[in-house]
Amino acid sequence: MTNDQLTNDPKFEVSILFGQNYNTDAHVVVNQGGTSSGKTYAIGQVLFCIACQAPKQVITIVGQDIPNLKAGVLRDALSIYNSSVVLQTAVKSYNKSDRIFEFHNGTLIEFKSYADPQDAKSGKRDYLFINEANGISYAVYAELALRTRKRIYIDYNPNSTFWVHEQVIGRPGVQTIISDHRHNPFLDDTVRAKIESLKTEDIELWKVYARGLTGKISGLIFPNWYVCEQIPPEARLIATGLDFGFTNDPTTCLQVYLQNGELWIHELIYQTGLTNTDIATRLKAEGLSLKTEIIADSAEPKSIEEFKRMGWYITGAKKGADSINNSIDILKRYKINVTRASVNLRKELDRYKWRVDRSGKTINEAVDSYNHLIDALRYVALNKLAINNRDNKLRSRLPYNPKITSRSMFDELIGSRF
Image 1 (spheres, rainbow, N blue to C red):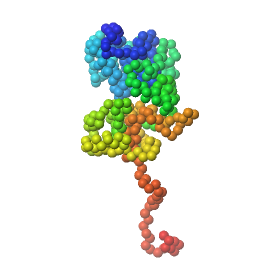
Image 2 (cartoon, rainbow, N blue to C red; image 1 turned 90 degrees about the vertical axis):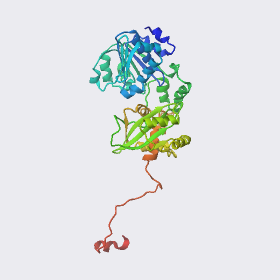
Image 3 (cartoon, helix red, strand yellow; image 1 turned 180 degrees about the vertical axis):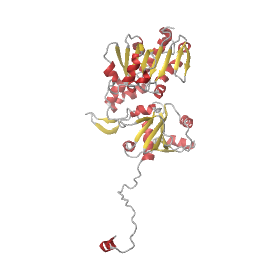
Image 4 (cartoon, rainbow, N blue to C red; image 1 turned 45 degrees about the vertical axis):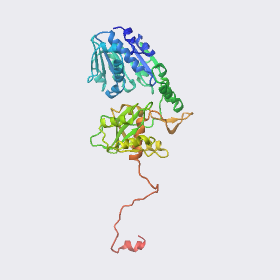
């Protein structure tokens, strides 16, 4: 099967990034790009073409962890596969549990993650794709690169400099491709407009995500948070947070638990195009009962009322004045643990930052981007974690002292004043 056969497939459409990555002679191809540039999808198409053309090859696609693979590059790969009849005839089978495409010509595409450099020493391959490379250590990459015979592809969003800039770019046999959303002809105009609007929100974010330039994203609101494998069995559910979306913004939902004074958070939903009925169905599928307390965006009273009529225990967030900063202050009192499966929340926490003014000074105002799941988290903080301070009066609570009944020198000194 030739490349022309695949690209002539009516449903196998490619962008300029496909040609850049497919026609290269470099041993290492670095794809530095902004959000929605289509770099990951294009590299996936390239690897499928190579798999069809070259028999008995091993192609390894590596992600930070399995949840990231499933939510990102593996989802793209399945989309590419399902959209092309020609490609489907070339694939012999797809093993869902092992995440391996096997082709009739004996070539394999495998999706893997590696815990450490020692783990990365296992296996050799012909082609390697490191997806979202800034989530993978250089030590792991080095072991994988040593065991790759033909070509290495790397992609990432350039939030800041890391080992690719220091150890890879500029060396012999390395090609660097910088892309942004303008290189993706299949992107919706509303998404483009939203990406470009970052310029008015934060110029550094705009450089990184709208232009694919290496940035210095500073002033993160939650710089310290931790990945956990699962919610501890003994943790107590505080509430479920829900933020409504539909066309451009996703509907998001997460659950917040408390144990030993720490918050434990698990992402449930991150998806566009969901109606309220769809959301209710998803919540039930995630194991929520009608008695599970849900805190939702109070700016959507119609949706909240619809959920109430369906029998759900749901209330609006108590926003009030300066509720964004107040809820952030509440959350900062806790150590925050996020499950590894909460891929989208982890990405938001890595990008959610304070606004910077024209002089470059950080101001106490959150940038209204990359915060859909964080908004759901804030709603829970406002309703369930806020300190009750009803009258704002300073109160003193002294320990109880029993009244002295017998006369003593103390009585002679103090008298009736006590």
